[in-house]
Length: 155
Image (tube, rainbow, N blue to C red; front, side):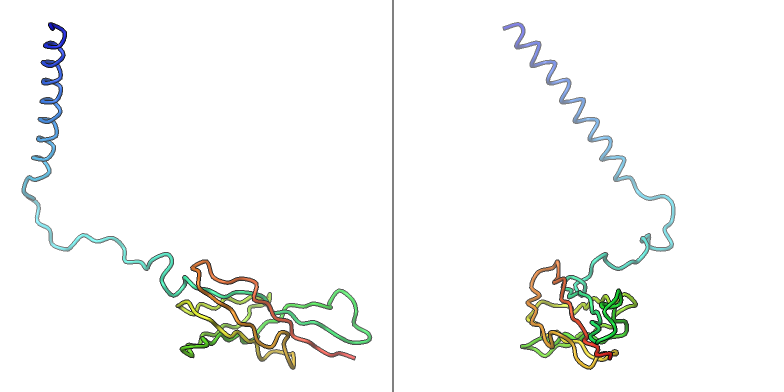
């Protein structure tokens, strides 16, 4: 019985000490501001790391495929720079485009999920294989490896 009373009294003192320490911290935080604030304190205004327009992406690579009698060497597949890749939503006709870089890579950010008809045009090739790809871009990770090959006939 004696141990219980000593334990109860010691717990009472510990909890009262913790409560009073928290109370003084709260009281110090609620003290009035003595220095004048002339401007609102804000951090630098920056955009979010990934905005809603960059959640859904379609990316891939466009290459040229050389077909001919005399060109069967290392330049058979070359990157296709400057090719226009266009994605059109099948239902809402929302359009997003991108141009390939020097390595033939592109990334289209349509801004919303949907079923897109993706096609490539322009550049040195007369046509691209496949002519149209249908892409269901419904996950925030995007759709990768939507690749095209432009066929070049060199004889």
